[in-house]
Amino acid sequence: MADSRFSKPKSIGNKFINIKCKDCGNEQTTYTKISSTVVCNICGATLARPTGGTLDLAAEITGDKQ
Ligand SMILES: [Zn+2]
Image (cartoon, rainbow, N blue to C red; front, top):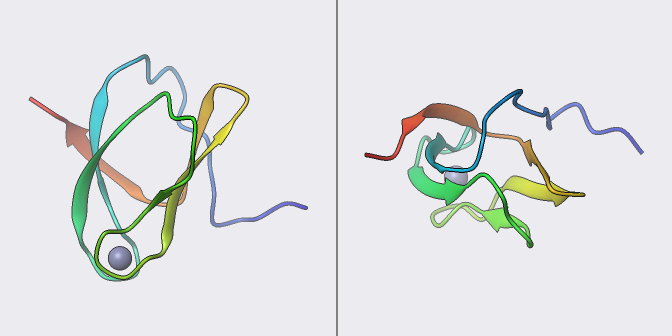
């Protein structure tokens, strides 16, 4: 079932990125290749989920982790 919260970033490569929770504004780091669901450390919202090797994001990408 489609969930409009999630979208797939294109050509993101394999790297660490900073993502921002749309619900509470918390920023945290995740890897673009994940094997399990990523949840917000603050409010527990689902921020990303793995879909056959491609990251499915429900958070805003704020940049690459330096
Ligand atoms: Zn949150």
